[in-house]
Image (cartoon, rainbow, N blue to C red; front, side, top):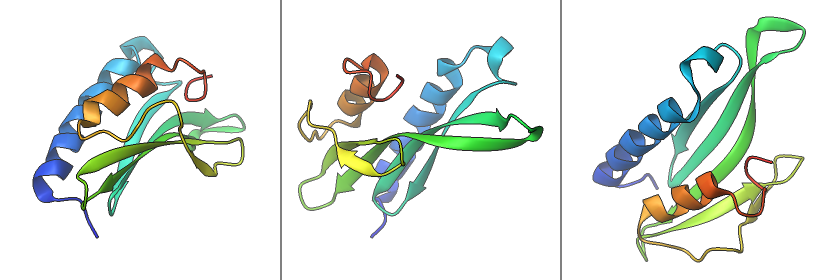
Length: 114
């Protein structure tokens, strides 16, 4: 099931702004932050040029936000070194997407940004 249209647009606007502001202009040729939406899942990831060929960009997952249409709450997941998703235990599911995005940005445990 896909995100409700209004919710999807809201998330797209917030994450587009977040990704644009996270990386300074002078570093965008070295690193980018992007997102993709698939069904009820939104994945935030980091992109960097491949070390052997700068024309190829590789991606690494940072965070995954999952929307439950029954509760209208978002749940936050973090990736391990093998890009497998695990429930992030330090914050409960929230109705406000911004609360989870703020937790990723603060990264009090170092699990998202290292």
